Image (cartoon, helix red, strand yellow):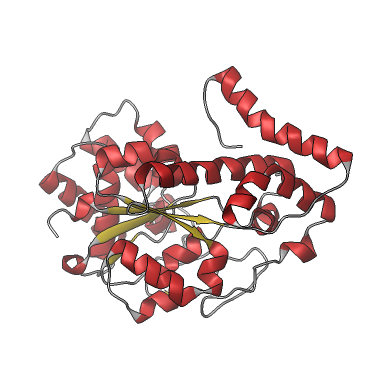
Length: 332
């Protein structure tokens, strides 16, 4: 499609909510060009690109450093040759060819705005990885918190669509806390609220034709029904690859913080919080997030401890006070 660079799909949601699973279910669909890693384009790249204008050379250097570093051989930086990330080895991707295709695409199509850098980076990767771009309808990028940048995204790409994964905050915390042990339950809950509030506001603002809010639990417990919903949302054909998560077409066994390995969609992590969280943590999370739990149909408890109720009230109001004092929003 001639306008492929203007047809992005952004996967949104809180970290460890299931966004990687969704990306890897879409991974090898012939009508999608899926970038296999997070780019942090809106939260990091754009800040560093500020002041560079649309000058191709410095933007290319920044792209190599911030987006393509996954594929750069370690030997280029004087480091021992080894897999580029702890999750995946991209040694078969010809790095210089990837960069050359990126610069050639920019030279051919031009840069209307910084967003064209991201589309060029994704599509150049697709070409280098051997994806038949002539079949593609969309390119796909996944970075948590993409839901915070829908205004900028739609200003650049009016045809963009969003799939926002939301997960039971207790399970989400049980997984995330193993990676970031410094995050206390209240801090996490305030951040989860902000992400989920943004998703619900986006759904109301842009409508279900552009914004799909998808519970993780539904995806893993009713996969056929939810995959059909995703296919209809993206207007893509059914394909067997949607039923097995892969990364660049190779079997992906998950990025579970509990060392689970899967060969297919699995609901094993649903409800795990009941065995790994202490009751006070779970009660606090459910109190802080109770409004969204009720709206999304998640199970709730009624904690009786006064200390838990007071802590929950603090974490519900703290982000609001911060925004008022600082005049800005932040990730909590």
